[in-house]
Length: 270
Ligand SMILES: [Zn+2]
Image 1 (spheres, rainbow, N blue to C red):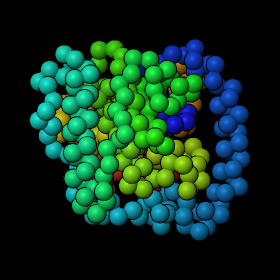
Image 2 (cartoon, protein in one colour; image 1 turned 135 degrees about the vertical axis):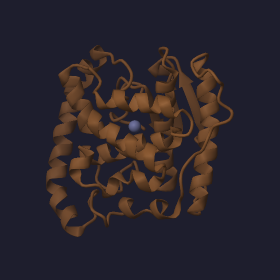
Image 3 (spheres, rainbow, N blue to C red; image 1 turned 45 degrees about the horizontal axis):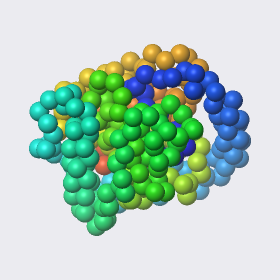
């Protein structure tokens, strides 16, 4: 999705870019922090804050009315690494089918993203061009999923695709209004991102379980990025341990209901 929230933990980063945008980000964080400080108590009191069982996102009907997401993806090539683009295109088709079937159970019409754009460089993306170092980004307005095709690790890119698709599902289902019906702050961002990790794992668990397991262990060990970068990422996306934990929930539970980060207490989305 748009904004500084969407670069992935699983790809090598470009510290130079991060250093350039860090001052802007820090200023942004101070403003957001101030708003959160003022608004948090009131929302807590009303029971509508994310993390409260009564918040709109936490009680969405998708959590109750849908069964397991996914299933196998018969159109994937046998060797996922032979050509990443072929694997990603096939997976996009599978994700459309999986999510259409799942949302239908709750009476929600699924519409595929307007475009799935596999880019060689961030400049080719629909949004987020000047933002950040990202492996994938979802642009909620035009509903374009962008994935950077880079490196050898096809499954890592597939996870990114599934994660960005999850943002699309958050958007079309109304689980999380990404333009902020609930006040946007970093805690909100972590719930959004960790839910996307969980939903991505739910969709991929039948597709390539062993590779998903490997990726989850990798996420749990942290990214190996330098500490300043790591801290910024953790603020908006959650820690490696939290990400791994929500991936485990998605992989084991396999349902949207397993991925309700909006009802989870703050320490589980840290
Ligand atoms: Zn994301």
